[in-house]
Image 1 (cartoon, rainbow, N blue to C red):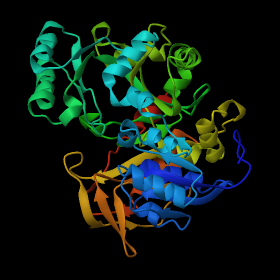
Image 2 (image 1 turned 30 degrees about the horizontal axis):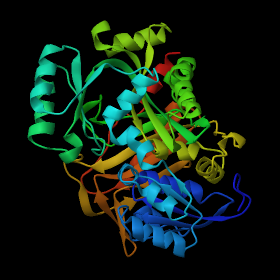
Image 3 (image 1 turned 90 degrees about the horizontal axis):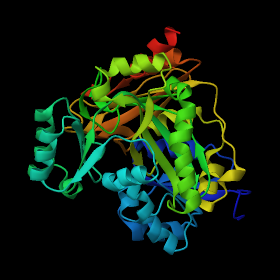
Length: 455
């Protein structure tokens, strides 16, 4: 096998069992270089695809996964979820001589420690909200009471996308501190807390392929984190996404200069050693105390006011979910050479192309998600519109019967010539899916459609 670029078929193992991993397997299976494809542990969607073989091993079984990869002569392992990255799965596998797509444990600290991530941004002059790091309830309580701007409370460690509280007042911030410190809702992940300034504006997700030297941005997405329409309710793992995003197009120069370039400089100087996918959650806007509401920040952006800044809210050290489900159907390029080059340090010789289509992804969840999940409910899938794709997350196959097996059950992605048509196709497809207590947001990409129609 050539070190830099692919020239023959390879065997691949994708580690994980969610919608992100199904979407990655689905795209990898289309590659001219795809040999045998394994997914560990996979889900009902990967089980139903004849091109993919599920492996009944948990993502925590590093030894079992490594032995299997060696036994099956796997050439490239792609790590999906955050927890195994934080626990050092890449370090473990690389020490056994395997080629892995994903960052080593120390590099993945950009995700598994929000405090570390904020210090990295500060050091490299990447715009981010003011913050303080605290390790006990009393200090945190005192800080919130003394600083009117301190209204975002984050558990430092990994919390399944649910450890962030965006508060409107002091009382809500203190309630969040109680949940983390006193109730212990996030266990060790909440032993340290990052308290941040609240920002107003609009968010986007930017995924960056990195090979240790080169940064290759993917097309921008926007994720819908809140559980209910109108961005109400608790934060979740993600209720839907769409791509491309006008917000990125309008602010591309600032994002490239203030976010991407400092990352490239850190790689060049050796202050960042990273291979894999680095996900930047960006808010384009202003501090809360400089605008009356989010619409004011949006209006500034619509008028191309230069006062807006691309603030990095967080880094993730892997493909986003559900951003991956929105992006894979738009990706024109063969994904395998890109993943291989990222792992091998030869990304500068690759190019990436996108279909001239928009995508909208709607997550179908259990009604009471994120508080509870759905187990063992029969899923029925009718005739889907053209250019609509179902990516499985919380599902399992029982014989030939598809059953629910999680909080976020399915991610339904549709393409269209415009965001408006993609959104129409996605919600038409939603009507073809049925399972007990199924729920979804009805406003995915609605704001984007409104902005597009107004111009």
